[in-house]
Image (cartoon, rainbow, N blue to C red):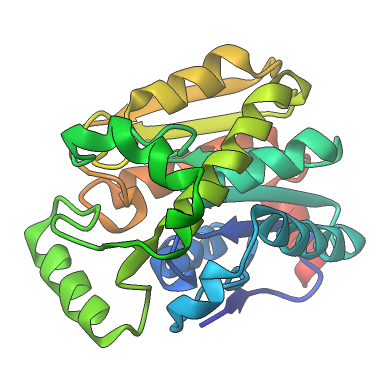
Length: 272
């Protein structure tokens, strides 16, 4: 399930972080395209994620953070530049790591989920705190359901079939997982002024899980002098698998190259 794409002597790496109850599968094609553009790419399955819903119910947001932070530290020992790219919960994790580590070279935050307020969130969501902050959260899970974060109907059917097989993501979202995500999001919002790294924010105006409120908050509150905010209009939550996936790659590569200290000729010389 984990993946890495690398070349000998490359000096630029991107650590990708997948979304809540997802897996590296959702980032794999995006990662391949970043690699084609000259970046080594790494993505590992976050703690509690995988095939067994029992594991994620025991996982705290600190477990996700500590795991991702160690991945970042390992890459930093071997590369001159290490970038963080995340989707959904992975984007929140990328922000959390950057708040603590000033040597992060740049951030790509996709479908950042600081607030659960997308158009598929049910009207009775105002009752969620009653479940999230009581013992009820250990007993209830939400089934993954249409549209599965995907606008493209062909891709959506494929994802639906894979979810039934429980091979690429969990087909239920435990309330404990939602609680931990929101707790981590709360911590990130408190310290977001500490982020002064170059950042690219990409978010769909039709995100079914989290509205533009999350992306707006990041853009307005980071201290970064280099920051770009792209609103996509032909995808839902899983931008890297949806109709805007090629545009997301293009904007990501342009952003990374614009802030990198290495040009293509220097990289070719290093890797030769």
